[in-house]
Length: 325
Image (cartoon, rainbow, N blue to C red; front, side):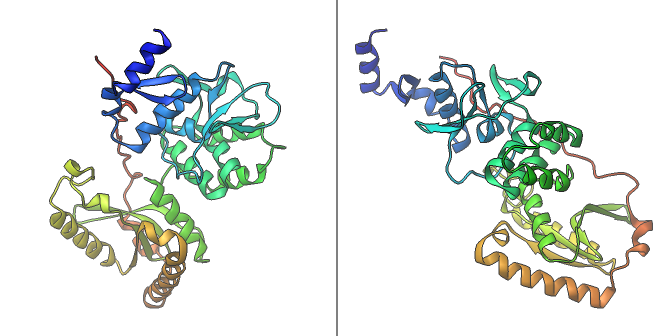
């Protein structure tokens, strides 16, 4: 097409400029309903403008790999570029110097991407411990192993922020079910009474319940509004909200029937000023449980499930809708 033809399509509203020299049909853009989908499109457009060999890395890789990660403070398109001197930012794209091996590259819909383990540790080096812990937990949930993380870290011994990488690997666990549970574990550790046990199960009277986090005889449950929202509204519930809430009330009655205490946590409890208030509240609740019931759980051994918590397999949907003109 001539430049004039392209300009006319843009002026007519049939095409939209995604990035200089990269266009999308307006009808296709209308199919994108989430910020995540728009980010993928923007990252791919940026990649098309880079003529040198490169792979997607950091948050751009995490998006394509469908890892659950925290938002980066300032979003960039991240690429790994072999042979460049130093890392730099140009036109909203961050080009990274850190080398990688061919074995760390996977293809996602034809796009070369650094794998889960390398991506999680790159995020840790770039954004710090908590961002890295969330990414590493997500990578483990998605099928990476502790050995994979160790192998990815082996080359980073003398890289910037390598100590953060070691701390993340030491703390990462595949047992969290979500970002919120990872943040909850970090929160409970800050209470100062030890490292909580994840996914503690209790079974009796034909019922089995799994609790998110346990310290002594006290449980910390991470709540999210999506558990109450029906699936038709983007939530996880297959019931009416009032029925879901009633089930949760009966669940807590079951758990506390074993002479245990429960603290409820929400997303807002993990950040800002509310975090301090939530820490004070949870310390009071935990110490009250210790005073009433002690910390020994040997009596609960006969109520423990025989196996680990079954892992729910959630199928991943395509990040970008298929366009059939």
